[in-house]
Image (cartoon, rainbow, N blue to C red; front, side, top):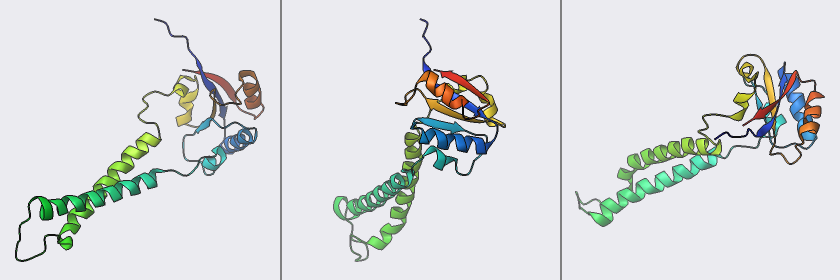
Amino acid sequence: MYKIPTLYGLIAEFDKPEQLIAACERVRENGYRCMDAYVPYPVKGLADALGFRKSRVPLVTLIGGILGCSGGYYLQYWCSAISYPINVGGRPLNSWPSFIPITFEMTILFASLFCVLGMLALNGLPRPHHPVFNAPRFALATRDRFFLCIEADDPKFDLRGTRLFLEGLHSHDVTEVLY
């Protein structure tokens, strides 16, 4: 069955990173919020111009570390003091110094797993195909061009008005992006 293509947004192409940053600032000042930029290399100040907030990955990593630490300690305590208590050399059943290596390792294991899985979940990955790959000149985003995409989900998005606005930002080209 044939699927009718729907509009994802409009993508504007710029020649220099300074033009892209200025365009991002103008777009945010104009009230657009659902947008993203695509660049061939890291551009200083672009995240601020796009209005990105701080990541929650460190918090997810901390939660994973705390769960791993408490889980590792409790597992050893449960095995040594509750489930299978053995008095070896008169030491106490809850001998916390001997629990430190496993507790440390479980902390690192859970923190790293939560970090990777949290990063993937918060970034919406895996996403094998993105609609901007359908834009005709988007392959240049890996070489020497800078792109700004305003998504059609934005409450302020109007096809004609947004196109005129992006063309007024001295963009090289404005293209519709279809799903």
